[in-house]
Amino acid sequence: MKSIIALMDYKAKFGSKHFDTPYRSGMDKDKLTHYFNELDFRVEYMYLNEINLSKDSYSGKDVIYTSSEDIGYKYKSYIEDIIFALELSGANIIPAYKHLRANNNKVFMELMREFEGLTNNISAQVFGSMKDLLMHLDKITYPIVFKTSEGASGTGVSLINTEKELIAKVKQINQRDYNKDLRDYGRSLKHKGYIRESLYRQKFILQEFIPDLQNDWKIYIFGEKLYVFKRPLLKGRGIKASGGGYDNYFYGLEAEAPDGLFDFAQEIYTKMNVPHISIDIVFDGREFYLIEFQSLYFGTAGIPYSEGYFTLKNEGWDFVTNKLEIEKVYADSIVQYLEKENIKNPEHIYHS
Image (cartoon, rainbow, N blue to C red):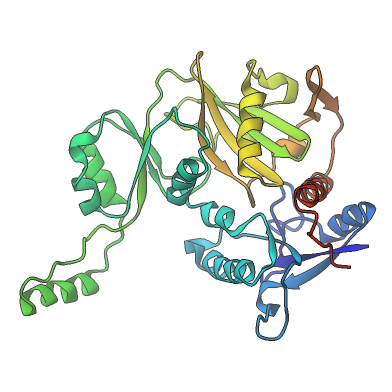
């Protein structure tokens, strides 16, 4: 039986699951073990804090892991350190560290869109401070979508119509530390030529606005299974389709997916080379636009709410009526990914 390491956080949580019990406890590890065993894989659960690179070798070992949405993303930063170190040590990290870096980090996500060549029909700019923004104010066209780098369910997203609004928004998202600001001001008095730190250094994104949209589509792809739901723009939520409440969305066959939507999503999934992905897509009647994506630790509500999933056949996309548990969908996608990677890289050796 082949072996795979699953890294948990300090609460013994692994992954994301809608309707988990207890609340926010992640996937059911007994079920996950069962579904991996059915696929001839043994899961070895470890806490992230048990990784010891000076004592143990993880070179060539297959490692799956959790992320975190803890307050301030402090523990997520620790997870990034562990996962990046494991990847550098030769472990087969699934998905690769760059995907963890992009998780709940929309600035890196936009940069990843560029270097992965995912799409080129929607523009975005990323900034690290007010001073960065001021260097490019003359190149910004309004209205424009403003996004904080962190945040889910539409938080941190707003439509900006003027330069004045934009400047105010950048100030609004920054929490000042007046004691440190005062000390930095003192440095400017003491040291001739010293350039003070910007008072506003919270990174953010400006993304091209696509007008007249009525909804978006959230798509999950887990290996050969595609789940879709339609999210209308609800009254009072402005341009934000996410965060409108899962009971207000339309799933599976009721999602009214336009022709070409699944092919567009599949192309992105293939380019990303991951076991699973969550994609937000809009359609203006002519073109599809990739708005956001995540390739680990994303919401999974579309699975229990759906009566089934789509799968690609020779004649097109077929709907399979079959309600599956997230643990099975996840395990299937990981094993399918490893099998494909093994075909591309025959030297890969499963540890047993």
